[in-house]
Amino acid sequence: MLTTGKAILDVANEHNFAVPAFNISDYAMFNGIVDVSEEKNAPLILGIHPDEVRHVGADMLAAVTQRAHRSSVPIAIHWDHGASYQEILTAIRTGFTSVMIDGSMLSFEDNIALTRKVVDTAHAVGLSVEGELGTIGKTDGEAEDGSHAIIYTDPDDALVFVRETGVDSLAVAIGTSHGIYPVNLKPELKLGLLKEIKENVNIPLVLHGGSNNPDDEIAQATQLGINKINISSDIKVAYHQKMREVLADESLREPLTIQPPCIAAMKAVAAHKIELFGTAGKASLY
Image 1 (cartoon, helix red, strand yellow):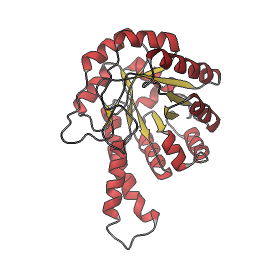
Image 2: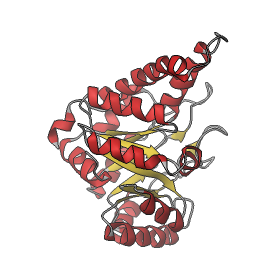
Image 3: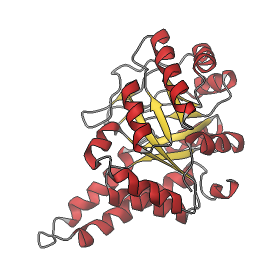
Image 4: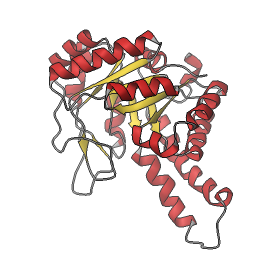
């Protein structure tokens, strides 16, 4: 069932669980993620970053939309980290049902103005909108954009931001980074800060940079108001690490032979996240 991010996250907010937003960057990954979500009877948000859209081609979205319509679980197709109003217009034209506008590197006032403009346009055509306040870190050159120094979300600013923009969900900065953490960097979430933010705003909160964080912290975050967790690096590492192992056999050449074990490895990681976030079985709530 194809639906919007708001339709999925409002239920998650009401019932106190988090929905994974898995970033996919090829069609085989997409099918694997939908398969494991259906096996787990779990709602799904498909995150596709502008860079990933350029890689797979916008025409793939027609096939993604068709599969989502046929799915036994609710699925939102989410434009991840839109950087401009023009990108959001592209997302609307392409068939996304949910968009994120990331004005986190702008001034507070400019972030509000840009996000409000996107909300007005997206809501007019039935799409949901995620905004971001505060900045997510960045661990390496392969990760999505972020800042070298995390600017934590201020709870009072969050209240004003939500009121002035009308966003359906809010990505908050509580100590995560995009990418895989190096061995010398220990991720640590400011769960007390998350609790303060949630006390100030009642909309679903989003955690970016959810890969590679300790399971116990993630589990606590879902109980304190996080309703969407973006997972990109963890599933891509599993997928491509298995592919490196498979391709050690240089006689293999058919994707039909090479990709299935890679998809299986990715699905195992995704299944763990679905269970960890409390998403398994929750498709029955929709």
